Image (cartoon, rainbow, N blue to C red):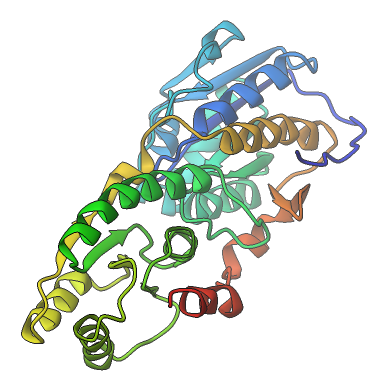
Length: 335
């Protein structure tokens, strides 16, 4: 359960819009549902859904949503509004055009569900044009500063765990190392949580450097001496493509026969977990309450079980740090 803030409404809006931007994440649909129904039940007359994120905003692909529009979407993965990455939105002139489109349609505020790039766009939009914006953290990477959790993270972790539990059967049967690559180009939150939860022998993340040769020698020696345990190595994809293949190659050179399993976009799909449905619903409803309470240019996140507001300027200027003590648990518990 979450603790929600007590916010007094001081503003009124006749019409708002929302969009989902960047990579999709399980739980975006419950967040959409939360925004739409909270808005309509709080006196906001019209809610509009913008198709395909900022790309749909600048082409005016905007449609009215009703309570019925969001019926039976809470259990669905992905996003009913579709999503896209929009490089054009980095241009001030395009953001000004987007603001004019909203004004032309009498849309008074915008709620954006997405990751750090989406929040950067939202912040610049309100800073330059005055359109009120509220952000919600929709990303499986859990890398949004100020929020302990993000919409989709829990589902992505559970999806990876389900796959690894199946992979482990073969790993144990053949006494073989399996290199399981999970998502996380710039952050190791998924890899760390998955690694601890599945009892991985080793977890590799972008945040903490390692010597590739020494790591492979140690792994090979452990396997040769019978010290290996689960046979599962969890690797965050990282910024440098091919890391998992390079590890496999060096292990082969050392006499091992590792197998590679790249989980990829399976982690973004599937029905959202109960936790993500609850988180997304509370954040969606809270976004409307913050808007009516006069807030602007914030992200609505969660910290220590309490729904909180974080300035978007802070969200886009800071980096969420993977706790070294938590990461060290991956090593402490594998033997």
